[in-house]
Image: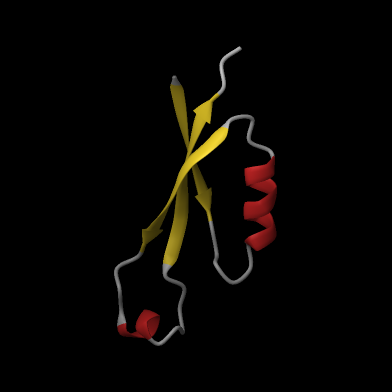
Length: 64
């Protein structure tokens, strides 16, 4: 089995379609999606600024 990890820059409030498109274009099977959180600040706790910088998406490559 081979795996590939992708980094997707992501803004939670605007990029839902970007994530849908990215996932639908993958050739293999999605194993995990890991969000990278910024350092938590008071503004993030109250929802004023975004909390996630990017997503790491691990894909299992299907071998023929």
